[in-house]
Image (tube, rainbow over all chains, first blue to last red; front, side, top):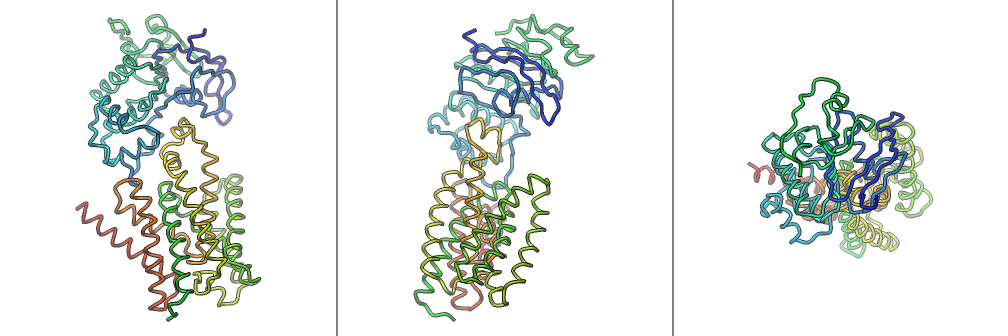
Length: 232
Length: 261
C-alpha cells in the first residue's frame, strides 16, 4: 500500500546466533500510533533497533521517510556527571535554533530557565521530558519510543503518555511505542503489535487484542481489563 | 639555569602548543572514560624514541611510528583475545621499558622517559605547531559528535553519525598528540599531560564549551609555568609541567568543594 510509512516483511533477527525475532511481518501507516506489546525478552527493543538500522537482519524493512527519531530505553542513555553537560549543550548536538529549543521545552512543560542547568542534575521525570523534547525538536516524521515510563511513578507515567498523545495529535507524527503497559494500548494506540519472538497479534486493539491472544502473549494470569471508551 | 635565549623561547612555544592540544583532547578522552589510554600509548613510544636517539632522527618520528604500531596492536589483540585494555597495558608497559633500557645509554634513557626540550630544532618547532593546530581543528570538528556517541551510541547512529569513522579519526588524533607530547614530557608521562588539565577544567566548568576550552587553557598554563620553573629552578621541564598541573588540579578541587559546600 502506498500510504505505508513502514513495511516489514518476514523479518528475522539473530543476535550472537540466537533468534530474537522470527518471521515477523507488519506495516505502519502514516499518522498511526503503533504500540508494541510483549513480555520481557520478547524482542521489543531489538525490533525498534532493527527498524532503525542499528542491527543486521534478514527480511525486508522499508521506510518511506528517513526522518526518524529515537528514544532509547533509559538504560542505553548514560546519565553521568563525569563532565559538565547542560541542557543547552544537549540540544546543540542537533542543528536547531534557540526558538525551536524554547518552543519544544515549553511544549513538554519545562521552563527555559533550565537551559544552563546540568542535564544530569534534573530529576528522572524532568530528564524524561528533556529527552522527549530532544527527540521532537527537529520535527521528525516518525518517533520510535522505547519504554518511556520505566522508572517513573504512576502519576508521571500518565503525563508522559498524554504528552506523547498531544504531540501525536498536533503534529504530522507517526509513533511506534514499546511498552509493558497494557492500559496504554486502550488509551493511545491506533494499532497494536503483540510480539513474542514471532508476531502474536497485529491490528486495531479492539479486534486484535483478545483475551486469548493476551494469554498466548504473556502465558497465564493477565488481568484483562478493556476500557469502555474508544481509541482516538 | 639555562639562559633566556631563542632556545628558551622555542621551548615555551613547543610546550605551549603541546599543552594546549593535549589538554583539549584530554577533555574529550575524559568524557569517554578513556584518559588511561594515553598511558600505554605513551609507553609504546619508548622503543621509538630509543631508535630516534640512537640513529639521530627526531624523537617525534620514532614516537609516531611506534604509537601507530601500538594502536594496531591494541586494536588487533583487543579484538582477537578480548583481553581488557588494562591487561594489554600490563604487557605493553614493561615491554617498552625493557626495550628502551636494553638499547639506550643512561643519559638518553632519561630523555626518553621524561622528555627534553633543551635542544629544539626548527623541524621540531614546525612539526609541533602544524600538528597541534591541525589536530585541534580536527578534534573540534568531531568533539560534539564524539560526546554524543559517549552518551548513547544508538542515538548517535540515528542522528547519522558514522561511529567507526569518527572513532578512527579520534584514535589517530590521540596518536599524533601522544607523538608530539613525548618531546615535552617523555614516554612515561603523556597520560598526565592529557588527563590532568581535563580534570582541573571539569572541576571548574559549568558547560561543555567551558570544559573543553578549560582543558586547553590549563594545559597551556601548566606548560608555560612548567618551563619557567625549569628555567629558574633547574628541574627537568617534563616533571615540572606535570607537578604544576597537579597543583592546579588540587586548587580546582578545593575551589569546587568550597563552592559546593
